Amino acid sequence: MLGRPGCGVLQMNGQPTAQNTRECGANGDLPGFRNWANDSHVEELARLWNIDPQRIPHFSAPTHLMQILRFVEDGSIRFLYVNGTNPAVSLPELARVRALLSQRRLFLVVQDIFLSETAHLADVVLPAATWGEKTGTFTNADRTVHLSEKAVEPPRAARPDLDIFLDYARRLDLRDADGAPLLPWRTPEEVFEQWKRCSAGRLCDYSAMSYAKLRARGGIQWPCTEEYPEGTERLYVDAKFRAAPQDCETYGRELITGAPLEPTEYRALNPEGRAVIKAAEYLPRHESPSADYPYALITGRTLYHFHTRTKTGRAPQLRAAAPEVWVEMAAQDARREGGTTATWSACAPRAGR
Image (cartoon, rainbow, N blue to C red; front, side, top):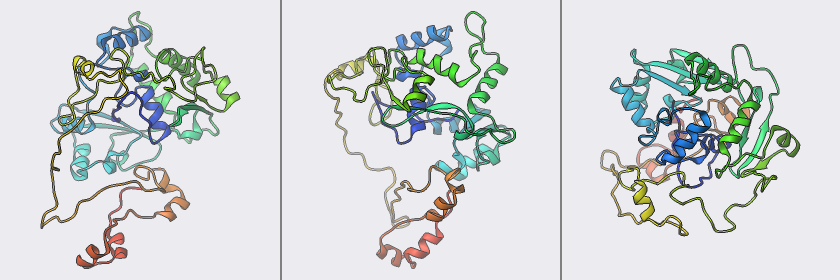
């Protein structure tokens, strides 16, 4: 499944969903900020789930999205399940990406709330419910956990993501070491209770939370434990960090190659000190402006829209505020190319809806 990589001891994410999916291990990491390269973390998860540790993928770093697509390109991957993202618009080399997603030997499943550009390429589309059509929790960037309860029923065949995933697991007949269903839960609250067990003792400890407390309080910050039953507003006031080799989420990567560091290399950096500062030599960029391509393109965010406009492009007010994507450049550069800022904006290609 396509996802995003995690990082450091604690990362503040830009969106609530990015925060809680990292906590739960839905971005290619292990749940509870556990370290895939730490055997004791893997064994702890295996005990919680009552499975053999060898069934938990942890023999190499999580596979990067562009590497996944390279495996699709060479035929190593024939089945791809895309959930809640739109790679046919959001990735670089779009012509290549769309060709890969369209090839006949790939069976593409897309689970989303709208028929996105990627969903148009899918062999099977699983219609998902949006936030007001399902119950669950989300975590703000400041670690505040909120309960969002279903307000209306999802339309037609749409179902909550949780129901789709649990149904998928049942059809795969996933079992634990005793032969019992690996995912026996039926409701969001049952899953939340299991997540409390999984997060206990980790930085993102939810163990003293409950749906009842979240309804009463409106929001609780993790860690929320017996020692801090109301949640912890501030972390690291004791200047102690979760950076010890036996506890940290990741051992980091080599700056130039991106290769994961070995535990011995991480220990040599003295991670239990105040900070690890790495010096890197200057490396020229892979592509520099030339006579044929004289400009460097820097991409950024649009205030009024998120990702590929799959949702926000359907809001009239947001669409009116930023109906098109645009290119900004110096006025003298625009004049040199024979246009104006207005015509350059109008010539910019659409980046999805």
